[in-house]
Amino acid sequence: MRVPRWGIRAVLVAVPAAGVPPLAAAPPASAANCPTLDTRLAWYGDNRQKLQDFINATGSCAHPDAHPLALFDWDNTLVKNDVGDAMMSWLLRNSRILQPAGKKWTSTSRYLTSDAATALSKACGDATAAGSPLPTATDTGCADEILSVYDEHTTTGGKAAFAGFDHRRINPAYAWGAQLLAGYTAEEVKAFAGEARAESLAASPSDSAQAIRTVWVRYYEHMRDLVGTLQKAGFDTRVVSASPEPVVQVWAEGLGFAADKVIGVRNKTENGKLTAHLADCGGAEADSVITYIDGKRCFVNQEILGIKGQAAFQEAPEAKRQAFAAGDSTTDVTFVGDATGIRLVINRQAPELMCHAYANEDGKWLVNPMFIDPLPARPCPYPCSTTAYTASDGTAGPVHDDSGHVIPDQVDAVH
Image (cartoon, rainbow, N blue to C red; front, side):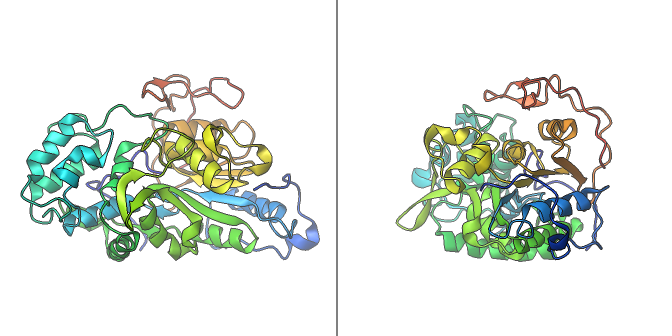
């Protein structure tokens, strides 16, 4: 999903405007009547045919009473670019971020460093009452400091903004994007997201010239077609995203996802308003897990498969897991790898994910270039055997396959 990020300042060039049966050949008579992917939309290599064969064999054509689970990341998987970034940009440009409780920035995240809290307090001041909007539309110093912490994970002075977190359960900057919505109702946030969505869909790459720009976003037509075809074939399709949940719900409506089919970064509520505290998962410490790497598995297992407690962090039994999953970044590697049928990867050159996808140990991984502005080939192989894996403490190491073997370095072959 979101690593590496297209930051709000990034310049874009570009563009045209629970359990599943074993994968087997679908009966010829039913295959002819299966929902079909649009043949006018070109996929890489034979990916479209492999997806179609999977749909025919796993969906309602072959198994009328089955509703296999299909899970999608959102940002840069179903759309080009990042709707969490688009929301942050809109909030800053419209002065919608509220002065934190007690005017203490540490109240917004348990992982915010003292350096970051000090920098934010200095930049944004204490003239604004707690719970009132900070004037970020005109106060560029405050806006730039918030943006730096969110987008660069450092202060404008180069100091680390977050520390002390499990790197496989939470990205504290992604969480912070939701935590800064504290003080609003979910419906108010959805209204903001609707305005940001309209701006992003109307924007063009030239808008990147703004200091805090309108983030250009487009739905991928190939993925719109895939989602619709899976839905017609009886799949239970859902979104699992590391962007704020109310924001993703607004965007996901455009692809036919009901609000209850979306899991994003979830804020706890108090008196009907969002707080800076996060939904719990897997019995972990408060505010320490979001839909990020192993946290995505936790929320899938807990909220969809009904697995509670610490077991939610473990791979679910095969018969309960998703049949299909799609993602684009290391954020997605665990929940995509848990899929029992097809694992679709949009190539944004996220090392750990691409190591698994290219190694393709069991033949269930499909790699496709981005549908808009695909990246050129990575000049060097992915360092799978040495540093492509990020451990819980943030240290780098080798990527292991499901059998525990180190994956050899992989060449970037699909672009």
